[in-house]
Amino acid sequence: MSWEEDKAKFSDRIYPATITPFTADEELSEDALRKVLELNLAQGAKGFFIGGSSAECFLLTPEERIATFRVAAEYKDRATLIAHVGTVAVKQAVAYGKAAKELGFDAIAATPPFYYGFDAEAVYNYYRDISEGVGLRIVIYNFPGNTNKPFNLANPWTKKLFMSDFILGVKHTNQEVYQLERIKHLNPKLFLFDGFDETMIAALALGADGAIGTTFNFMLPHYQKIYDAFHAGRIAEARELQILANNIMNTCVDVGLIAATKYIMESHYGIAAGLPRRPFLPLTDEQKRLVDEVLASDLRN
Image (tube, rainbow, N blue to C red; front, side, top):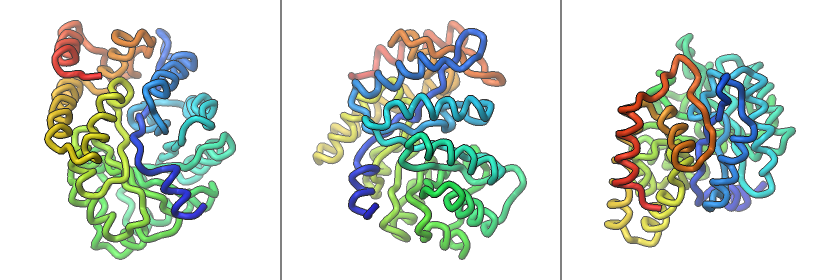
């Protein structure tokens, strides 16, 4: 694909970071997953980020991760699909990526390899090996708060990584939005996606091409209004809408973001998303009350 074709497919859109619904006995609920995707498509979603943190990726079995790709692939003719294939082992990440490619996904993504303290050269090779092994370009999932693997753009191997042709873009789940701008400056051909819902307009102001977010599962129309207002130059309106979204995000993070998202999908949309997988804890009745109150106060659809 040419860069112009890539831009038409990946840029100027906001992607829900899709959750993984479970049944009461903690089995993957493919029917509920379809309902989540269909809800977001009806709300105007143009793409999905499948198998990321919001999907509880590292709590899923390999079979479950691929099963979520298989369900999402049913919508490949209606949306751009990015599969998160990240894990520590290159071999396993390649296996996930090959499955996604065979199912018709448009791109893959991966967190940097964590736990063992891999250096920048090893991280470069990790991304190169996955991309070459799968045959798709890859989105770097930059989430240092969870992976404890920050990128140092002054490191020659890191700079080489972000300049490489096998990198499609970056999901910048990092509240240091200055780094997003520096990555974009280093390689303007990369597609930069804001990964923290609460910093979306700040990231857009610094050159983000779109956004990928957890709370887009249940408030996509609200974020689309923020996105549209920003690009129309209605900055005060966009800021006000962002503040309302951040009020909701703040409460959801306080009580547990994934648990809150699943609760909202069930209580407000009638989609049985189930509970998050242990060691995540379910919401208490008091926490549910707090979520309901902030939604009633601040959600604008």
